[in-house]
Length: 352
Length: 194
Image (cartoon, rainbow over all chains, first blue to last red; front, side, top):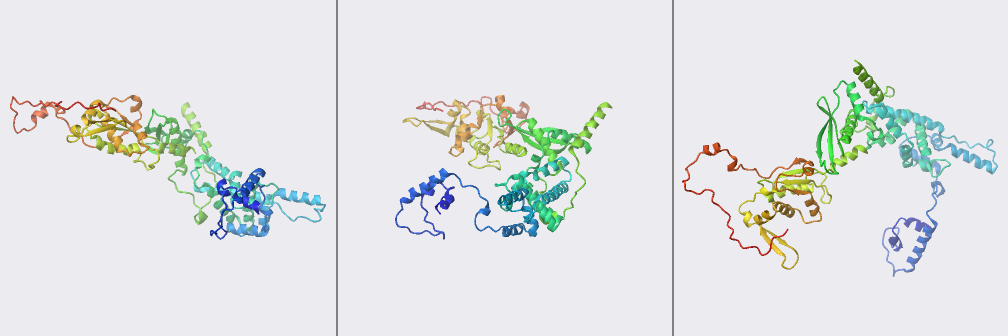
């Protein structure tokens, strides 16, 4: 009991920890006759012992009491507001490594695995299914949300969303970490992300593609809210790309102009550059130097063209997104192709 | 976050403002200049954050005082030591240092907290319009003057003056330009310092 007391107060400040608390469980203060001076030494000793022993070993939730795996799995589906079948959800949470470890354990105990099969299927199939669905839907959703966005940017955003980093973050926050059956503990990022995709695959098996896609939208695509999309896709030569884009649209070449500057002779100098095409402002940004400002202004112009500038509409979610017409197949315009055609045209012009 | 970085840089950039104090009341000018020093014209203003701008005040030797203030307005100073008190009228202070009246009026306009000294460091005062290049190059905008500047008689052409309708002519022996400052005052007890 004392150990649990120490564990619960480890995060507190030392001095506060040493002050015996008079607040009962009901939250009411209790009168106490005198100050028990032995308590200070006692609690101090407990504290020092805990410091000597070090932090407690991380344990899986199932090692503690009140753990009902079937109930937890059922609750998982209800938390997400989805109707899973018990079998598919169980399969989604079972990792290959768990089955292997379990078989090895049984073999050690002398149980014949062939005669008494485990009856578990691993989630590799569901993972693959979920990955295909999620990947296809993310690209389609982005293409229809941003019809003028370059394909490279869409792929970069898609890669960010489908990375282990993002998916494991989502998975650990919807409680997949505790439900997973795998041999590694604490679970690795790749295992967590695969398991999330397996859940998507399980939902697709049970309820169809539409339902799985809306799960991907609500959990994965919602990660884009408040993110700087231009940061996910780094353009090496924004001004060159801008020239190519304007050329392909039959507009005048970009013309950077210094709009405003302050404190040129100080270390806090700031310059604001605007980019104009046919005397129309198409992008503007500030910078520490004129070259930086020009670069950022070109990026701003590209952002505005792709519909991800600060003044553009946010992404659509919930029921509005169900009405969206998804573009699975035709890819968006590619930045690299645009650059190549532009260079070719430049060469032709210089020859003639 | 590259885009956000430059936005932040721009939001916290210090602008340099130019203020022409020629024929302007220093006390009213202080009301105009101080909000710029404090950064009160910015949406990000907060009394505890240091977001003020620089103000370059030129032509402080040509400031204008209302009524008889050059003679009657007195600046006081105390060194903190016994007998360290001294005072001087505005014209005397202006004679010692032509930027001093403007500086004192701005200083007394700012609340006496820890920020005051720092804000005053961003006030650059020049007696005339000769500013060093490293300061003038920083300037990107100017502050509107507080009062309209009237045209002086000597700035009108001879023709305009003669053609202006007159009620009468001065007699030939009338001395028009004979005013001189009377130096009958007592010598100050102590020289006004700083």
